[in-house]
Amino acid sequence: MTTIADRQVQDSGHSAPTTHAKLAQWVEEVAALTKPDRVYWVDGSQEENDRLTAQLVEAGTLIKLNEEKFPGSFAAFSDPSDVARVEEQTFICSVNERDAGFTNNWMEPNEMKAKLNGLFDGAMRGRTMYVIPFVMGHLDAEDPKFGVEITDSEYVVASMRIMARIGTDVLRKLEEKQSFFVPALHSVGAPLEAGQADVPWPCNPEKWIVHFPEERSIVSYGSGYGGNALLGKKCFALRIASVMARDEGWLAEHMLILKLTSPEGKDYHVAAAFPSACGKTNLALLDPTIEGWKVETLGDDIAWMRVGANGELRAVNPEAGLFGVAPGTGWSTNPNAMRAIEKGNSVFTNVALTDDGGVWWEGMTDETPAHLTDWLGNDWTPESDRPAAHPNSRFCTPIAQIDMLSDEYNDPQGVKIDAILFGGRRKTTVPLVTQARSWTSGVFMGSTLSSETTAAAAGQVGLVRRDPMAMLPFIGYDAGDYLNHWDSIRSHLAEDQLPQIFLVNWFRRTSEGGFAWPGFGENSRVLKWAIERLEGKADAVDTPIGFVPAAGSLDIKGLDLSEDEVAEATHVDVDEWRAELPGIEEWFARFGDSLPASLRTELDELTARLGR
Ligand code: GTP
Ligand code: SPV
Ligand code: MN
Image 1 (cartoon, protein in one colour):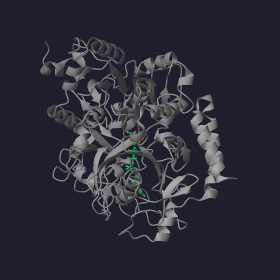
Image 2 (cartoon, rainbow, N blue to C red):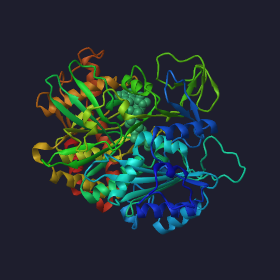
Image 3 (tube, rainbow, N blue to C red):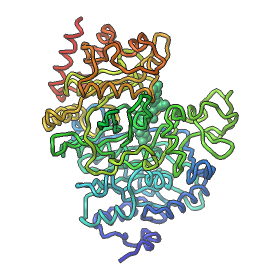
Image 4 (tube, rainbow, N blue to C red):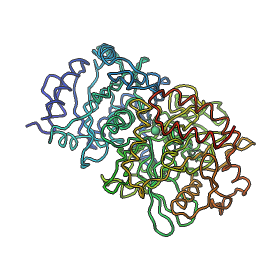
């Protein structure tokens, strides 16, 4: 039997130190193809992490931060071309093109494999190939969802250790039943020839983020960045998991999960889907500004939701860390995130450095430091005409460091979801909050969700696009089938357990151009209204699009906003909504035959209510 110590010195010439036959075989095959100098099995220990991060500091990939201010924390700076997800290069290679649907790029799987085999041939030369056993969700879940990421990036190993449950415990459990695992192969695509010096952030101008949904496998090439490279996150827990969920009758969603306790001590759980960089982490860590209400965090990016024994919808967060947008996360907007970050054990990417060995980004503090080193390594002062931190710079922090983390985070059974919010970034049209008339009309709201693009994905920022359930870049199969799946979940939920669905918009602008709603902690007022709607307490106005807060029903006590300003944030402009209809028609036309009939009916009814 091999010991853990033996694992550290295994190289590709030896048999793999696992009793999992398929895993051993896969690792052998990948090593034979990619030709690394050595193969290393990641155990997930602190000692290992210390060693790898020290190696990265040595290589110039990581900068060790001031130990007092940010204990055990590091800053990384990517190649300036490798700063976000690359949706254009993300593929769903289903056997049939139809199953990828119109929202995904597709290539015939064998053609794609031939291309990838060419790229991976010798791709790890001069590097170490790391084998990371991981599980998304709980290791002691009824049906744990295992993955193994093979990567040639130490940065990925250090980040995966924060974002997922990894290492020897997982491997042992995987071996117990010779369980299925999602093979997730990653290379930065930058082999080193003998004597060639490495660069701090190896990557390749050519990038491929590829999913084989029938095989449930992932191959990622060329990027070291977040969602492109930490394959447990978007690639597994959303794209591949959405396919598993379709086949197994559950939902894998781009949603935060929070627990809300009312002044009467009643507990509620809310899941909320907002597109990338549209406020999930902030809402999940919200500090309520209203008396007596308490929020606890369960998740900030991904929710896996199943139908429970009583016909209720139950959600778990499959992740173990936060990979949060740094800019805009600050002591005034999100002190809970700041406290979690301050505890250390974090990896920051593309933020700015302070002169005392700390990190800074726009919005972190009210006062801007007089001098910084920006994310590109240049001197920076408040007079500089570009941001110090990249707009998609990120903090990667263990979720356990959140003081307000709910105990229920650790429950593999998850929590019962009482309300679902869909939200986007819209300057006009979409009011602060609207309650759907029914489950189906809520699914309609989700299916037509629209939002301005953000820096989380490469490409132009600020373009309004449809982003169904905030899953546009993450649905691993045909988008119409996905909406049908949402529709069908309804029949498994008990009538008295149905979550209520709401559409929210924290980003509406006033006629003067400012935000119509202060957002952040003040969003607790919207949560309160939603809960009071569930309790049958809050008044609403019945509008063509759904129920919006009646005058006086939204608690604005202590808020520096007049009733008129609240009305501006919450009103439904029928003309704006009429103008929205052709865009929705066009959007639905793209689904072709796979659009659920129920959503077509919803659109017809909305059109009739708006009148023309
Ligand atoms: P991903 O991790 O990319 O999925 O993003 P996310 O949805 O978790 O977004 P996050 O909470 O990190 O917020 C993204 C940006 O939106 C940050 O710059 C925030 O400061 C800003 N933001 C979040 N909530 C609000 C809000 O209520 N109002 C306003 N105006 N801005 C907000
Ligand atoms: C997102 O883009 O939605 C993220 C960041 O949460 S990443 O992990 O890079 O996808
Ligand atoms: Mn996200």
